Amino acid sequence: MIQASIRRAQMTRAFRWSGLLFVGFLAVTQQVMTNGVLIDFDSWVAHSKRPKMGHLIDFLLKKIDNLGLRGLTATILIIAAVIVSRRYKSWRPLNLAFLSLLVLNGVVGVAKLAIGRTKPRMNIDLIKAGGLSYPSGHAANALLTWGILAYIAYRYTRRASLHGRALAVSVGAITLSVCAVSLFRNTHWFSDLLAGLFVGGALLVLIIAIDRFVPSESQRS
Figure 1 (cartoon, rainbow, N blue to C red):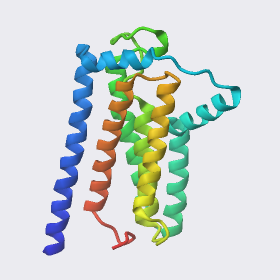
Figure 2 (figure 1 turned 120 degrees about the horizontal axis):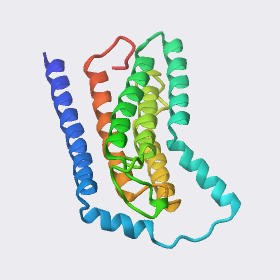
Figure 3 (figure 1 turned 90 degrees about the vertical axis):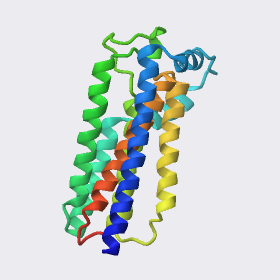
Figure 4 (figure 1 turned 180 degrees about the vertical axis):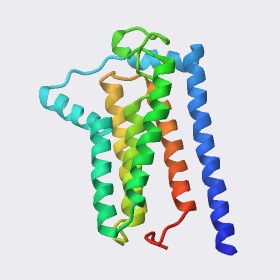
């Protein structure tokens, strides 16, 4: 009874955080759709002068940006989930990986098509124009996919060397690096990235909460 009460309390808290993050996404969306004050900041960031970088630095920046690329992150997550599932004889990590990718691409994909925002490199900010800038799939992918990968590694491999805080910091560092590079290379508006972080965070918290609410024998106590 005590464990059930604790689990319900944790689930309620997780749903609350997920809901708050999604409200953040809706708030940013409202700014984009109504040309709110956040759009002025978008314009300022997009039109700020950027120093010219050499070929090597530009190459490295593109590689960092690729850490939020859907194809790359999805491939790494699925391969890792297959390895963990086979080794520990549980379908849960693989199911979790597929669920996160399905939900992420569904939510972000629908939002991109519905809003149709243009990229900042076009030097014009329009919605309903067939663009796919908002929300940033790179930011959402980086946070959710690397976050789920870290969660699977921590939750299912039973390796004491995998510390939760270190993994969380690593996911945060990757995600913020992807966002910073996107801003520097002017591939996304600031609000695109902020919305991507909100929706990616909301889905990450929600999926982890669902997984923990239905525990399996393979999970660590």
